Amino acid sequence: MLKILVIDDEKELVELYRDILSSKNRKIVTSSSGDGGIKLLQQEHFDLVLSDKKMGKVSGLEVLDFVESNSPTTVFFLITGDSSKEINFKNEKSKLIRKPFSFQELNKIIVKLEH
Image 1 (cartoon, one colour):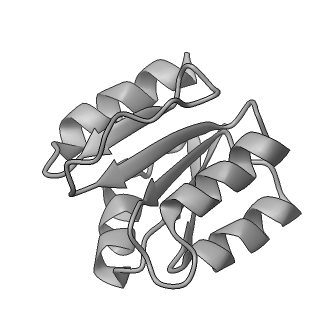
Image 2 (cartoon, helix red, strand yellow):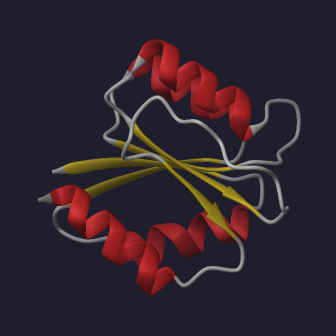
């Protein structure tokens, strides 16, 4: 079972991710803040983290730093609406996903991780 943590400060988006990405082979856990996401990451291992880049107190980049330092096998998808530069992820399966994106395409990428 693929354990996915979704972090976004827009609660409606978090619910949308949960609804679209849910399947019998996935456990979806959500957080509406970067610091809440880090707390969850301290408690359990996730195979994949999907995080918005711009959030309140703790940004997606700070969550990425935590994941890369503490859980290097976790794949990280950083979601952004800005035109920021490419990011050098430590895990080669990690990706920068630019908004707008297709949930269908996102789901295809995640299916590849399951195999």
